[in-house]
Length: 422
Image (cartoon, one colour):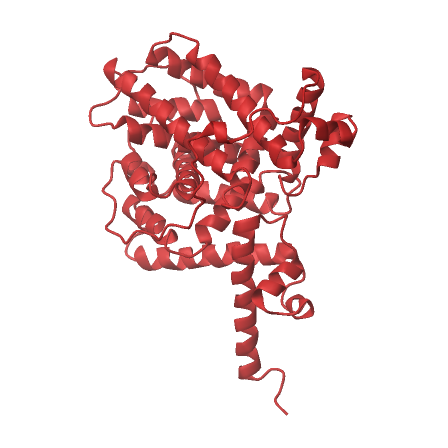
């Protein structure tokens, strides 16, 4: 009889373990960590539930192994690339970014998890917070040489670069043909992007994302605005805390202090409620900005001011959009098409704003308004992710202002000193 410790059994165990990890990676990326059960993973891998438990005691253990597997491969690859130097160079970082896009499912998993785990209740929250702290320290060794004129500390420069990297991943996954991660990073560093084979685009929904009218704008029946607003506010808080899939209409009704039957009169489904939240928030913000006759210089100053106001007065709204954006990366998510449209509209809006800045003589020569719009939005998203993990160490408006000072020829904005991140 073959020993339980024989090489064949050991090899079979490794294969089963890797099959479970691959299945979990795909399910977590598509459905979100919270929505996937151990039985789902076992079924996807073709393994019994009991068989899975022989390898992993919990879903959290699987997630940790997935992240470690990805990080260990990167660290090994970095060591091979940089054996002749003490630290990776900016070119090495760009090569790593290109390589990561070729690893099936890795970017999808880590990008969705980065947003989803910003909730302190998420089991991976502490792990991801420490991962970002390590990443900022490591990135600080490579990025400063490429950005000697950045007007703030080394760590702050690394924070902004990581934020840009995260944000570009998000936009790329929603719109792979429109946003190139490596080119965006190279443009930020003033470097030449490496020659590479483009990663295959993930299949995406064919719904026309630009048609906002195709989405329900006023879900439910006529009722008082106060009660409707309380339901929407409750949804924002619970979606941010628990994620869309993990939050029930009954829980939202209880939180808002209304019977579920009343909630259903306003919002027949959770998808209607989600859309109502997104459209109401976005329409209000755009209407307020477009009603003004600001110059580009004034407009960007107001944007920095609004970023500070959001941090101080609306942290729950930042958490809501960050969690939702990570969750809705899966094309099957009910918010996916709207978020993709939202990014397209925002890129168009900021492209026009950067073009106005160029007309006013603010934009540095050689800067492309469309690329600057994509990068500015990406950095803002990424900063919000890091801020939700480390609110005491990350200064969103200060970092955005520092970024704009490297883009503009003039100091168009008042100085926004960043806090010490050391």
